[in-house]
Image 1 (cartoon, rainbow, N blue to C red):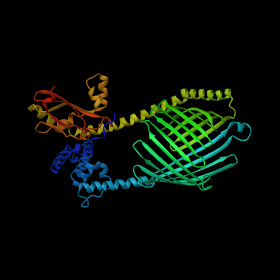
Image 2: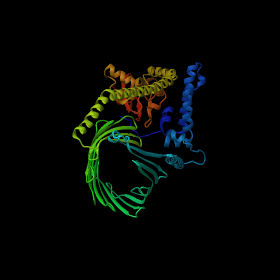
Image 3: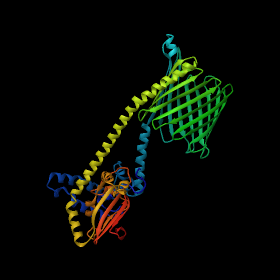
Image 4: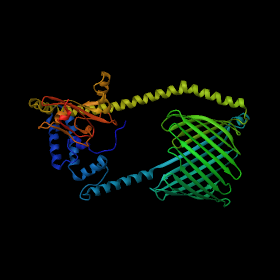
Length: 540
């Protein structure tokens, strides 16, 4: 479970100086002087202690420099250290919180525009048609080839452009086309696109889309061919049928008029779609179903029937890396029997259909499906799966070691910070013991789940130790002369001197056992909650 992001933020410096986010300038100066007395490097002779003091003294000075400056403190309260390091000019020009916030927003917008201007989204595909019968006849295995490429760029907040082209070769014939599309977002519910292409399909067109309701969208397009002057008008209506499904109707009027009705449904484990299209001289229906066996593998079945097509497609795919997916498909239809191999990486695709036979021989079709399928499962079971399990195990081990290393560094830094609090904390503890005052006997800061099981078996206790840090000493140091301890609300306790975050991303709590006036007390609070002790309600 991830730690909630809501709630007060940008409070680590307040925790470091142990002051409230509402602290006055005088309280900030007083806290700085107290901590500086503890961590000033000149107080220590030993090289190791001087090094520890210097590191923590720099942290204290940085916190004081920011919180004691009115403008910097306002920036920090709004945007944290990101605002401090943003390059904002401080001084007499910006004296109000509104002015500071406005300037920070301007800088952010400027950076976003720079990112947008540099952000290009390329995509492309390569299709290589191979023919085994043609190869056996001595005409070469390459039947044809096609390439397509497109680059999209968000040139401003409301405008985007896409430039693309394609080239196809089949036997001794070939051709190509180039296209450009300019998209403008007119409002939050409507957009318009202008498009043009040259080459085999030279045309000009315009298309507008509008959300006519929460669940409905309408698109209207007009295109004119530059070759024969013919005009095509298209209208598409899309309706959200449920959280996971939507339907659409498309009407096209022109040289090849048609009407199509489609449906799509996409869930976590499965997706399906279907469409029926009726034209002036043609009819067609398509359907597909995909089942996801896991986050990395899926199976697919698809079919197409019509006046010019009849085929069945079976296959599946597997994600081989964060950006790459491999698919293997088997197709039987009136055009013949095919194997199709696909590699998808980012926005790039490599598709290789292999024609195995032009004849629909049932024995050959069965063998063409069974043999590679069996080979695939054998390779998956004895080669691919062991390889990926080994690689995932190695990655998990590396991530665990990295996280563990970071935690060890943070814990070591916290322990070093505690070393310099030892003498003062011991003196305060002794005085409180003499007068029957407040003494913290045990304090753990760490994972909420682990702390709830702190009194269980030894194995669980080891888990608690690995996901928490002992903060008994710094809490005794923070006990006031009057015998009270207060940790401020809205301040993450990991920022307190001598603390660290033992489980990044996990909800944390602070567990405290203490004695007061001869009685035993116990309390546990969430990370951002206020802690004020002693209290009678904590008595065991």
